Length: 301
Image (cartoon, rainbow, N blue to C red; front, side):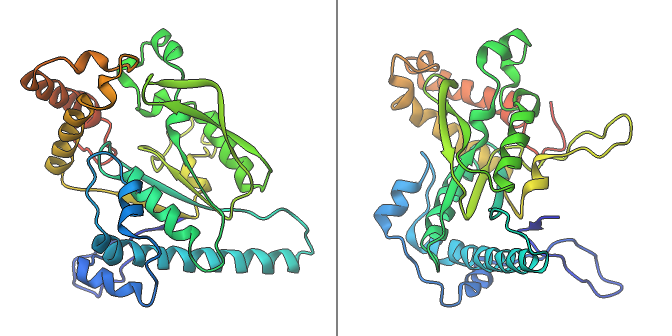
C-alpha cells in the first residue's frame, strides 16, 4: 500500500477524527532541516510550466521538505529490498521506487513533477530519476473519434489503461529499456512510432490527472489491478476551485499568443478570436470538461 503525502493522524478520544495532518507553509518549511537547495533561479524558471509562478523561496520552503521526505522513503525502500534479496538468496533486478503525482488540469502537476525530478536527481547518491506523463497513453484521436470520446479526452476512459499497467509492471519488475509512447500538445495527438525509453531508473515519477483514481469493482468479485497499486508514494496536488479555474483561463489566454499561433497547432482556430470570445471559450471548456474531470469534484456536470 502506498504512502500518502499527508500522514495519518492519531486523534485523541472525543476529538474530531481526521485522516490528515495539516501544516502551514511555515511549519512545513522546518522539515527541510539541512537539505541543500541544488537549483538556482534560472533552472527553476526553466522547469515551470506556462503560467506557473514558483520562485526560489517557494522551492526552499516547500519542495526541499518534500525532497527530504521522499529521499527517506527511497532509502528505506532500497534497504528493505536489499535485505529481502539477501534473506531469500535472490539475484533479481532492482525494483525502482515509483512516485505517483495526480491533480486537476492547470493545478501545477507538471511543474511539481519536474522540480522533484531535478531535486531528487541531485540528492545524496545522485539517483537516476525518470519522469513519465500519462499523455502518451491516451488513445489516438482516430480511435477516440470512432468511439465518440473526443469530448471526453483526458477522462479515464480515454486512456489505454492496459498499456499503462503493462508499462508500470515492466518498470516495477526491473526490466531494461521499457518504452513509453509520446504525445504532442501541438498536434493534440499521440505521436505514432515515437517513444521514450526508461532503463532501470532508481526513481520513476509517473504524473497524470487520474493516476490515483480507484478502479471499478469487477462483476465477479475478483481483485482489480489499478495504476496506483504500483506506486510506493503518492502525491495529490490540489487548490481552491476558483484559483485553478483562473489559472486555466490565464494559461489559455497566454497560449493564444504562443502555441496556438502556430498554424500546425490543433487549437490554431482560437488564436484569432477576440479576447472576450477566448475567455468565454476557456471558461466553457473548464466548466464542461476540466472541472467535470477533476478527481475531487463532487458535483460533476
